[in-house]
Length: 300
Image 1 (cartoon, rainbow, N blue to C red):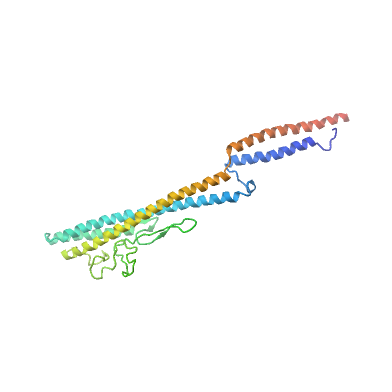
Image 2: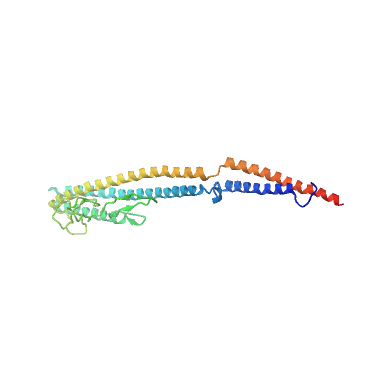
């Protein structure tokens, strides 16, 4: 039609270009970010699910890190506990040697000096063994954060030489006392006494004292073996928890990817189509505008 006021063909070409630009911009946005749901309008029904899965995956990964930190924490305690156990074994050897009547007093005195030095070393190990600046051998339990629900609590015994259970009559009298000591060194002599290497009654300069310490050390070694076994059990439990959480985090991330990640094959195909349509629409818009130019010839 030879009219000028309304160019239907040009308007259709322009509308097509506008719509096509939206498709092309969406495809480029998804290809540049790798994410299908960049804005809420990209998937109003699923973006909440997608973001929720991302949060769960991130939280689970942090929980895994916390568990691995807990494992490292317990291993630090166990390594120091092994060193203390070796000290006690040597102390028992010294006490056994000092209990024999074939030694001269100066020889027993030399053994007594080593016995005391080993005890001091025990206290030094306890005081200096730390994890991230935190003392780890003084009987403080540690809670592990899991992000949701209740996380495990690491049970750590008190490894100090002078530690003892004040309430010996309770069913859990040995709770958190690595040496299983039930009373302090001022109580009646016995196998369940605590050690105190700062006191004056920790000498083995007599055979009777050496025999008493042998029983005390035997009891401590039994308790320390139990404490280390509990540490190992907790470490194995944490490792199993970490393995299960790794699988859970993988599932969260897999589900989130299926919902929200861009399909590159599909998006590149859309982009190629949109680019071709854009070029064609531009050409047709130029043709539609040129077509109306012929009307001007009638006015000449």
